[in-house]
Amino acid sequence: MKTKLLACACLLPLAGCSAEVIPSEPDGPEPNEDVAVVSSAITVNQALSSGCSTAVVEGLSKQIIAQMNCIKPNALKAVPTRPNLVKTGSHVFLYLQPAASDALVKALDANPSKTLHISSMLRTLPQQWLLWHWDQAGQCGIPIAATPGNSNHEGGLALDTNDYTAWKSALESKGWQWYGSGDVYHYTYTGSGATGLKGTDVLAFQMLWNLNHPEDKIAEDGDFGPATDSRLGKSPAEGFAKGATCNGNADKDGDGVSDANDNCPADKNADQLDTDKDKKGDVCDTDDDGDGAVDTADNCPLVANANQADCDGDGQGDACDTSSNCGTGGSGSGGAAGAAGAAGAAGQPGTGGSGGAAGGTGLGGAAGGISASGGAGAGSGGAGQHTKLVDDSSTESGCSAAHRSSSGSHALLLAALGWLGTRRRRR
Picture 1: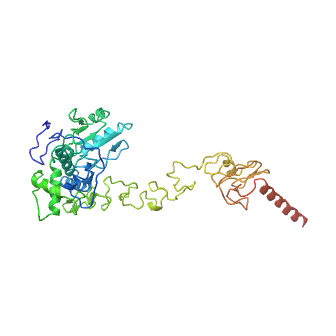
Picture 2: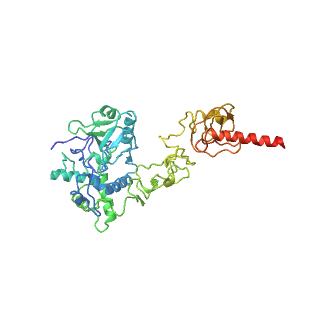
Picture 3: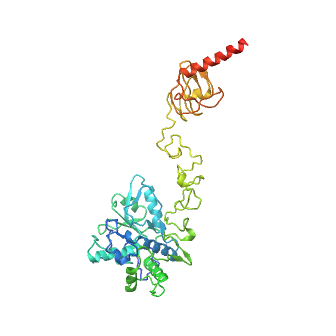
């Protein structure tokens, strides 16, 4: 079997090496399949025949991640989202040691036009267990797999990507070392701040097993021996009934964030997204943008818009509507930016423009137009958005040509005014 050298020797499961430079055993990429057949109460052992995706043990994996952070606070962190960082399947856990995560983000931000596709990053004990067993059985096309507890994917210092050539210089400039021809997909973080977490995920599983099986406890030593191997196969793939505990502080939702630091302790949200920064995560916040409108009734649930304005009535608020047809301007058009309505709204004599920001189009006709603010002129107005008819020249409203003939209505109005004047003079 091929061997890979370590930069320093980790003789004890939790010894403090400066970094696990490359895997202690040969390891390969995960299979491409991202679909697993999951049924209730399935065990990790039964998951071996459910397909070829490690996503089947997601629940148990998240509990182990949380327990690892209980053993060593802040040992792992969720990698911040970036538009050019994409995981290739639900089996990928975007967690790394803090220093490795920071270095990766710097590389991503320095290359915004390139996309990095991640096929594997943090790999938990049950995931590695499945890969190893599939490899031993010649299943799922696994080329090679390290024994559980012996892959540096388990320590939060590794990632696999099919974009290994395109990202080589960018990653290496930030402390990520390409493994080479022996495993072309693989990069290991070897920069400053890396710490040895070898065996921590094994210890985390052992603690979870004992918490849930006080009648069948096993040694909590971080060593993957026969007893741990046997209990892992019997464990529920969806996770134990009791999750991680950090000196009595649990992770109820199993998302890898302890309850004390979780902005949604009862709902899984590893990314801790909080749009309105109210310390309540979007997953459990009924008003994500904090504008006073609950998400279920908010026409822009992620953009604050207390007035819920929706000028085109398409159900999407103006604050977040990127395809609004309001305010297009032009002769005879209503809206916030009606170009011809600007003169009409000001009430300038001699201008029969269409209505502007004050509300809709002006009433145009052969004899002249009436502006939104009451100014009269000799121009003509076109059809526009519906507004109420004015009954006083000082009323701040537009007139819709859709409800009056542009020539007839105006003529009738002028005739009526002339008739009233004649009546008064006769008296």
